[in-house]
Image: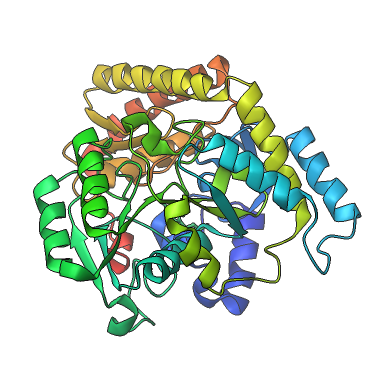
Length: 422
Ligand code: PMP
């Protein structure tokens, strides 16, 4: 399976197979991407990554979200390095923790307080605990298929978890008000929280933007029940708005979870909350050895400065639309029809008439050969380091990739490697 791979990647995979279970795990498991995708990378700069064999790609995955302003942004990294040189991590936090909490509370309109952690899953788990502690109830309503992390209560594959880990959860359908109302009714007087993705960004299916009526109804139902509304902004935070992503539909949650892009790749995540959830938040015990480190907080402060002072958001939206339009035209010219869904700066691209993803996988491989790293079933990300030339290069590559796909189409087989995951 790995025989076509260049030598360094192949050698690393062979070594990994001996000392890393399955050779790799989680979202980077080798079964999830086309066979010729590199597993190991050497470095990144701006909008580009170089794999372990030195091949350069325009990276439309942006590290699955953390890269907002480009890889190795000098000013962000310099801030982090200054923190490291102050001895980080110390026995307690620095002044930067208070500064960062103040800035995030100043930026996110629903928030009165902030707590910091490392990964998105830390933040979503803290949101769950805070909601339960605040309301002294157990039940949470979640949308089927939404990703909130990889802890036992939310990991998408149940192996190693128990039914009890997932007790007190009721599922609804995103953007479907009747199903939300039904789930809330089922929770009765035990509703602690409604969890919501800022828009539907589930894997393997088309994305959809939030119906404002759905968002408003979620708020109302929480208000009626005295429950907490949680927006999980780990993936979309700072990419939709310079505020919580549901600010664009005019709905303020009690809690929002952040991670990925907030320090442009440095390891920090956050739970933000309104005063309606403060008591719950201060009553739970949550912590971690690295949660108070100042380097990622310094990186976050510099990232937030860039968020305030640059037009990165408008730029990534514009470039995303340029990419979307170009791919639409190119696909059509070669007889393919794409479904390009979600916000243009977080695009998901699926082929029509491709239920087993054979077109998507083969096309992604052809794009990779042409120097563009894409994903066949997960949303992608644009970053501020990209420019018009990069987008034109991607569209040109797509032209060649669609032509190659057309030739291959009759001989393509189903993608069987995903069966183990689905
Ligand atoms: N929530 C959402 C919406 C996410 O996209 C992710 C990560 N993809 C998480 C939570 C978990 O974040 P992490 O992987 O940093 O734990």
